[in-house]
Length: 540
Image (cartoon, rainbow, N blue to C red):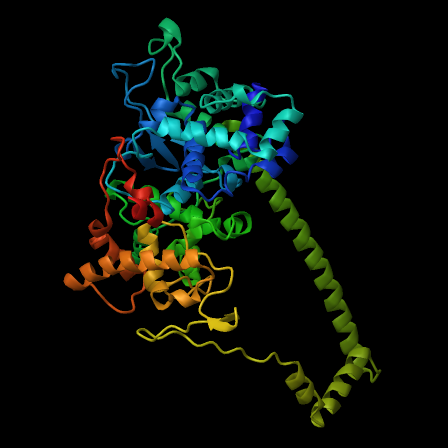
């Protein structure tokens, strides 16, 4: 195995699952590094690295993926390449590369990585998966910054690995090596070569051709699913049917998503909902993801969670693909083990029930004979205590007081919490920081606030509530920018003083043009409109 590539992958948090050669403790310590970064560059870098690892492709192919090149089919995300290095003219059949979710290891799950990337950026009209004109250099700089971090540099030094040997090609080499020889149950080398886009000489497409089953097996393996377990055949989290609640949630979490991506967005949404506890535990509270409407309102999360179908649910519309025979055998063995354990439990319960019935019969016969029994004495004492009212008194003392909650009525002014610091009452805590997020998310916070963090709508906050002068200036910038959106919303008749999240998202989507900036930078580079924050727009 290419140890250098695999070790690099573990250090940068896009690691493989626990395997025979895996350094599990090293993975556990380092795999969260990129996941915990909050900058937009690192969010992009993580999404690219996970997708690139799973596709096993060259950088040019990954950065060239367009929205029309991806679709969801069955239980996998399918990616089509227009051309590759060994097919420059694009004459070969367009065969999909299958990418599988890994709900067992959310830190390396490609569907979750894509969901976080889309939830923290906006769709700006570009049809590229990674919009921008020079994304290769952007990723290369992110990778170098990552390797310069003390924790990564120390681990590289500890293992005697030269950081200069790692680059944008390391993910491709590491993924191919792991997939071909990372376990004793690897996919065929032919399927690995075809997925990686390597030429097989004169035999390719003559004697050795692409088949979806082989690529599906490669996709499950490279996603980090355990090949020596029945869990290799897990299904992605999914909804059985899409109703109005799910439709509105997709529109709120991924505003402006093109229609041809909404089915993929449905699976991305399920991944965010299912992994919400993991994300809250492993991502900083200042992460832009938590400014998304999905994480601001627990009721939306609970409603979606109730509709979620599990990773082992075989009764629905999804069926596992790319599963080798030995995994099916392991699944049947697991079923036999569970059935055996249930039988043992039933036998144990029957034994206890039989003994209890025998004791009950003996008690009845003893009572009939006039013998004092423990059960009879216990009932007599309870009747005496109940007669004098002792049992009622005990029940009242043990009753848990009922907690009452006040529901927010439609149109009612939301309750604003107050915090005392700096010698006065303020509407935000002393450690409050204005979020560095997209303008679309900022508009939602301007109108609705963040109920989870107990932050009131930003329109209700003034400069005296801010902890420092810098925050006061940023609030002033936000108020100026939001006034433009508000004025346009009033002009077209979409303005309401108090909007819910869905209304706020629709209002901004309708008039997002009022906060656009030139499509080209001063250096004649295409600007990533959907990933610009307030500070970027203010500087422009």
